[in-house]
Length: 69
Length: 141
Image 1 (cartoon, rainbow over the protein chains, first blue to last red):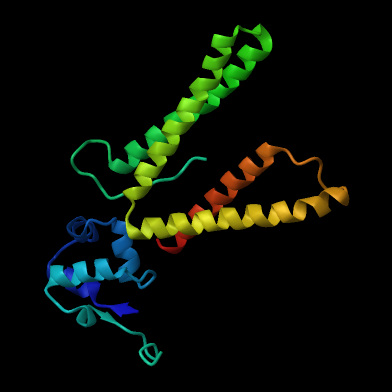
Image 2: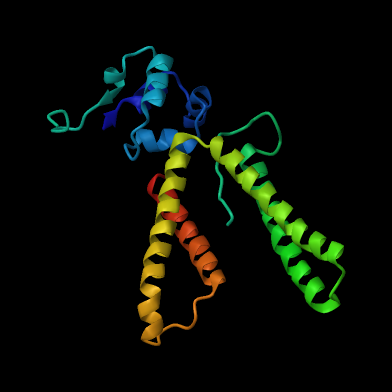
């Protein structure tokens, strides 16, 4: 899954550590989500969406071909 | 086995949650190891009376239980990625021990290995847990 987390974080001028603190997770988790190595759980995805005041599907996008599954 | 913990940052104190958790686990584990070794030596050499023998057994037991409680408490505080990493490490360790345990009888009959000792399993479990942890941690870095 792709995501726009890095862009949204940059818009707020937050570091990964800042975002991690806001969401109550480790910085490693934020990095893994941003780089696409880890797909967050639904509660974390909702938390991210709430924090950036966006809908989940505006932040997390399926890879090409993934949506058809 | 020593559990490697990496938890949410705790900015409220000079020692992070992670450091305190790992330190406490290590201390309880070392306490258990040393009190076990000490208890064995004490009982084997001095042949003490029953109350002393009971105490020699009770001290490592208490340390072991305290270690287990601390480990479980720290586990509950991990974030979701760390839980996944720990799960992958535990799966690696369980799978490795499972396979080796199944294969051991044929290896023994073929003369490649000696009699299975319980501590072989402990070393294997800890080693595989460490390998699994490092591997999963590297993958999600």
